[in-house]
Length: 89
Image (cartoon, rainbow, N blue to C red):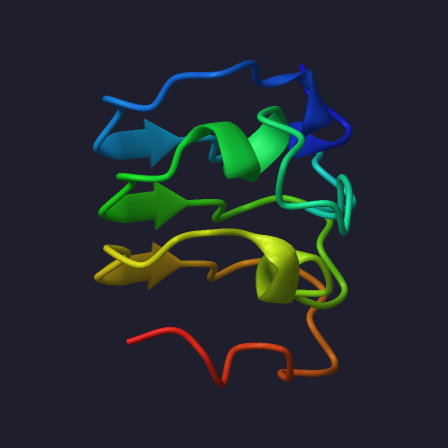
């Protein structure tokens, strides 16, 4: 189980990442876009499923280079704030 997506390494070809039901508490890894770990290592990601976890916000996504992200599934979390998503399509 992940408590954070920082455990993910560099996978630039990955298109779909399903991390539902893993008790993830944060997606924040690093504000340095040159660090190719966490979601920064998944630049071509199109679908991210973080449903049924323990997320309270999306803090950290603003630092990720997810220019191709089309679907973000995040139901059944503890999200109280939705910000930091302005740059996503």
